[in-house]
Image 1 (cartoon, each protein chain N blue to C red):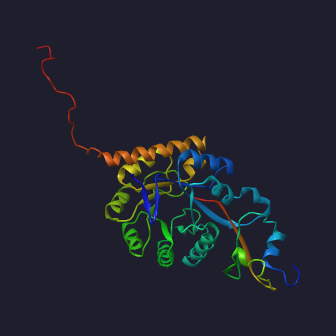
Image 2: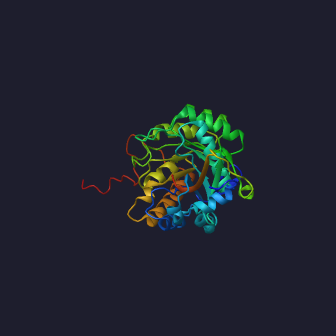
Length: 258
Length: 55
């Protein structure tokens, strides 16, 4: 089976879903189910008695077949990200961590230096480290060298829906990387997830595109199918582009009037 | 909180109920099996954390 291999884990779905921005927990759970995903991200927040019904851990555990990938959102430094990872592992029991360090809320671009440092420490502690990064092939190589399980370069800024604006660099990263490349952030429509898979990404991570869609459950299902289609196409060998036309039908002249 | 209160007492006061939470006491994680016996002192910093939606 063509499964997504991350450390010792194997997933049949190559769609990873974020759980943020859904209008309700119920909608989020329905979307997760509809998408076929087996890996979802979550964030940490302080317990608040008034929000107790928004508990995610209980419903997600009950769902079965879902592995959690806690993120370190909120961390501005490697030290804070490492702390978040420790707390998250304690709470979830999952060895996955999405290292996400983006101190500026206007662009939410990842800090490459703090990210590298956090990944170095966490990979050394045995976490399955999945860093969220700019689409930088040099940084991607550095992170592979310190023991990350995958790399997750952005398609465009988080929540911007600007799509695969980093396509050129993504292709380079995919070519040069021996660990799975997972596009994360900025995807808006299923076609973009399909395109990422056609390029050779091993998976895509989508959050806003599903959560703020008119019908999140339907959109989640569409993304699931798009990821499948893209992966199949990649396996099937996509034709090359040509500078000029290459006929598909015989250009017989007997149909002319002379 | 009264003198000699435990982390478990604090969680009861906070109303966590049966929800799974993480507890950090002065930068050290307090595991569930230790919460009844871990006592709080004045100026202790306690963080009670849960998972929320996030991408």
